[in-house]
Length: 609
Image (cartoon, rainbow, N blue to C red; front, side, top):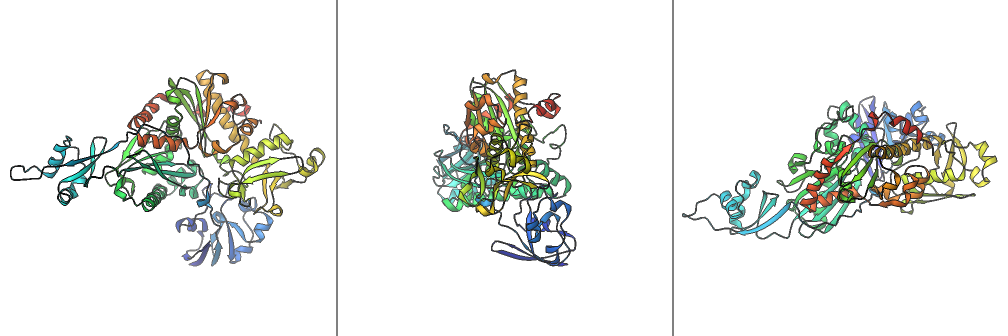
């Protein structure tokens, strides 16, 4: 056995592990957050740690590590945790994750007429007597004209509640079922929570179901991210590990309980006063939350266990709220178009209007919908990781210190970071800016080829030419440097350009094929709704300049913020919108791009900038 001492910020802990134990596995098991978008396969280079003590600090890195670590990093003891096996006593420094500083989009319009599934009715019951020996259950059900509707779990405390409050109680209904009986008149105290479980981030909204008011909002990085940035990597984890499904389910449920605990403590709300939760997310996220297997979604023909609306009781998913309340997972369309897309369509209103609209949600997965009240067609593209930073050498999520805006002039490069912090990486909106500006400046051509340092000296202004370097034998543009105050030298590399080309071609191809499927032209589309954080923060002109969005549609773009969260709130606050979500599901069809004979040729056509 070897001793491993781990430091992360103010946290310091020691563990004994057997020889050959994976350092990344140890970090995850012990709750040290470590970003590993590739799931520990050595592809992403994000799980950097510093070996402070141990011969390994000065040992030769593996080939997998060399491509991700600079000479200075290697000399300084930086290693990839996924490539470190413990074969000696070690002291390891783990960087602060920054996950609590994430700039997570929470805004989204959700004005609705209040009519929630949860209804409270105050009632004063006649007291039992020798002439009226009805059971307590019959007594309350008779008074409420709800025979057979009381939840069995409510019966346990019913007698005590009735007598402690002189038979003056409030019945809590979910639809037609009585899910709680409370002493006295509690009609004004009823709450619900709407949750958007994204692949990268999670957002929850505490809603007052008596007034429709949003009371609070909670956001966090999805803790499953440490097991992979994308749904396929996480699916593989559930297949390759016997308890993999339980691990991923437990992580997201624990984070939701953190959310509930925060709401309850901030506002003095008893857990049993939160009666209803609506949950949205992509199909794999919904299955993982519900504890349902996902292995068949990942392989052709990509079949989920369930697609219709699913109602669970909180105890079934381990949530600390009203025990007999309800957790509603909104309906899904297919294996790769989930409840978040249904919710975004709901929030956009496109399913209720005659005008033809295009909805684009570029998150870790890219979902696209085209249609109106007559019907909607959808598709999914594997575009997100590049724009989430997972496949970009210096890429990162939208956290403090991430470069979010880039401006390239003849003699300099300027940038903005989230929170005004020193630059530590570049996020999706900054990547789009950089690509568009590099095209305009002639650093990159339409094929995606970057000028090398020698070409830059003769063909670019001196100020820009001096920033064209070489990394791993390929051209790279220095966006920010330590000398300028950044925490690290940050480049856009030739490989990054190729990743963006693949991602933007996937989105553009999806849009083109949906338009071809519906037989419409650009001029037929009246609105383009951009949903999600990425769509909210990117520069529309730059997105059109690189071909991510058709240039013909740039003037029709409307950002609708966190539309998935907004749709989840709408379903929470209104029975009508809850039913509308199911209606949208039945009116929405899915186009599987991988089965299209024309997809490959269309994709190749859109690779060029």
